[in-house]
Length: 307
Length: 298
Image 1 (spheres, chains in turn cyan, blue):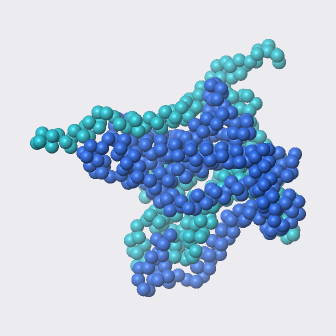
Image 2 (tube, rainbow over the protein chains, first blue to last red):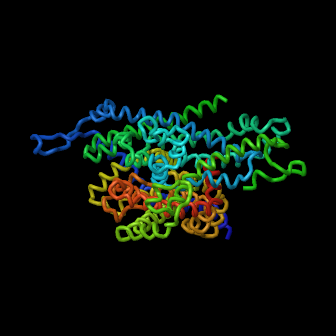
Image 3 (cartoon, each protein chain N blue to C red):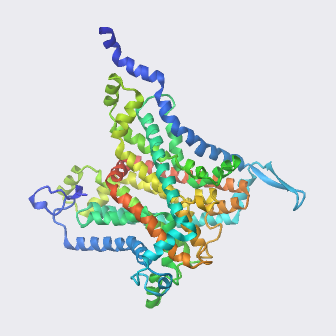
């Protein structure tokens, strides 16, 4: 019939729109998302506005009273927190560029004409990412240990055995573990972006006589900048959250204190039942992560526009 | 991959990208660098394999980079019989948390990402922004308040307390949306509607199939994330029977000073927990590499 044909196209999408099917597609995700993401964030903020007050001496009762922003003042004046923040910042400023530098160089090499056995290397570099952080840290803990490590034994023979677990080196020993674990992952993201670049650009630069290194610096790196930004943001988030590796190292070295990183401090404080202080710590940490990663995104985007 | 080695002509048979003639020095320098990096990445794994085969005393007294004796089977037996076979229990827990959690999580993320990509409705960008914000929230910032909330309903120290929060993957939604937008053409959906297919059928019968490389990627990365999760089980769980594998091994590590025999078990246990993960990852690499590519380009 003519009428049904006329109505067919608009009426299907109109009918669909009226039934709002997207709600049923989204709800199964949104319900747990609200319960396990948004509610905890709101609860942490709420919790951080209280403090525990003891009434009636040691044997008296404790109760929660509203304390405004005083927990935040306490966080920002806390010496352990200050040291922990400085420690992860120092860690990040060194570890993230080193890791991404290696990732970028290996990705460029595996994308270039000079490398052989590319498939093998790609797999070899990625293997550590498949190893859980705890186990990576346990393995390296053995490799750092003065009694068990063949590496330490070897260096001992040469005459310079550094104390990997000593107070001077332990931060960098931890940095090595995270570098070892995540370099391959970052390399693959950059490599994937390189492989997705259109082939014609390179034909043009080849005809112009540009060499491999020249091509890498003036064409490839600028074009995979989005991938580099993405990996940097993820690395910043990961650095501020540093927890697993130092906690494992705590079992073998006294130089890792319970408040070694902000996250470890938040955990330790919560374990001693000071939830409000811990909540304030978590909120500060989350906000700092947001600011740093958004700030970095903004910074790089603005530079991109200027170009 | 062969993408970078396609021949463009008889004169460029050796290479694809870059200049025609690759200098020998460049190749040597590149290979030296790559080999050094490969040694760095593989040496700890090699160490793990070697030392899984040693007895406790050989572990301390013999060269860590070479074999000495063959105690692998004894170590494995000790591993699986220790504390009434609690290790096997941890393996099963991890498979449950990570396997089922990632499967459910991928499905939820795929549906949500598909809806965000393929339907136009008010508030769509707002919902997407909030979910995207979730990607940036440190998981560790969530763990403590989650513990307090679960404590309120007396559900800490249960499998649910680790399983349920792990199901949510905002990054999965982000990837799904990108993939649904590029891999599922509007015309196909429109045609299916005209043929009378319901929305559910269009998703499960057509869209999900077209999105499948992306779904494998999301599944794998969520699987790894849950499998590696350390803080959440540490905070939520008290009963060692509920531990995931990684946390169980950490728990043994903390007991080594009391019982040195655990040292061997931590090593061989690490090997047992790493091997299946690597195998799964390598065998599915075709899928997740395609997934990574699309995720980083957009």
